[in-house]
Image (tube, rainbow, N blue to C red; front, top):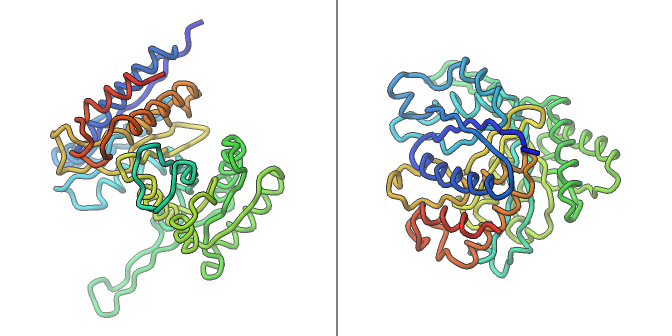
Amino acid sequence: MDKATYKIAVIPGDGTGPEVVREGLKVMTAASEKYNFKFETTTFDFGGDRYLRTGETLPDSAVEELKKFDAIYLGAIGHPDVKPGILERGILLKLRFTLDQYINLRPVKLYPGVDTPLKDKRPEDIDFVVVRENTEGLYAGAGGVLKKGTPDEVATQESINTRKGVERCIRFAYNYCRKRNRKKTLTLCGKTNVLTYAFDLWERTFHEVGAEYPDIKRDYAHVDAICMWMVKNPEWFDVIVTDNMFGDIITDLGAMIQGGMGIAAGGNINPEGVSMFEPIGGSAPKYTGKNMINPLAAICAGAMLLETLGETEAAQKIEDSVATVCSRHLKSLAAGKMGYTTTEVGDLVVANLP
C-alpha cells in the first residue's frame, strides 16, 4: 500500500541557507526512495533579498498558505544589509507565534569522530535534549519605552508566562522524556530564587504534571548551575525543560559542546499543527556561494522533520549515516576545513544511508 505524500514548504532563506537546504533535500529524497514514502516541496522566497526588493517580510496571506503544509523546512534567515531584528521578528518570530509552534526542540548530541571542547567527554556523555517554551516569556514582545533618548528614559520588557503555555510545554517534555526512554529524568531549568513569580508558576506546574508521570524522575537546577553542569558533567542530563529566554541561551552552549553550529539542528514544534525545522547556525553570509559550508545541521533538521511526520525509520537511518560520515570522513565540522565541499558532504550522507 502506497504511503501518503507529504507536502513540505521550503524556505531556503539567506546566505548559505539555499546551499544547506539543497543538501538536506537531496538526503531526504534518497531516504524517501529507500524507505518508501513520498514528499512534494513548494519553495517560498522569504528572507533578506525579498525584503530589500519589496519591503515585505512575511505577509499574512503567506502564513495562511503555510498552514496547509505538513511541515516547513527552513535554511536560514539573516542578511548583512538588513538591520538586525527586522527579519527575525518579521519572519521567524511571526511564524512561531502565528503557527503556535510552542515547542523549540534542540537535541544536543555528540557524534563519533567530532571534537568537543570538553576534556575527556565522549559521545555517550553528551546526549540530551532541551525542550524550550517557544511563544511566551520575554520574547512575547510585552513592554515599552518612556522618554526615549533622554536621561530619564525607561525601558521595560515583560516576561509573559501563562498556565496554559507553561503546562503544555512541560507536558510535552514529560511525554518526550518517556518516549526517549533513556535516563527517564526531566530537569526543570529556572531561576526560582530570583524570578519568584514566573518560576513559581513553572515549578508548581512541573510537579503537578509530574505526578501523572511516576516513571519519570524530576530534577531542578538554576540556569546558572545548568550552564556549569553542561560543561562539567553533561552526562547528568536526559531532557531539560525551560522558558524561552533561558532555552535560547543554553542551547547555544549545547551546540558548542556537541561540536559547533555545523551539527546543531532544531525544530519549532506545534504537535497539533505545522512545525518548522532548521539548522540553528544562521546564514553565515561570508561563506555564501563558496560550496564550503557544513550542511550536516540542515541534514539533521531534515531528519527531525521526518521523525515528526512519523517516518521514524528514515529519520534514524539519516542520523546513523551522519554519524558514519562524522566518524569516518570529515576532518572537521568547520566550513572550509571538512576535507569535502558542501555538495560532497551531502553525497557522503546519501552514500552511507544503511
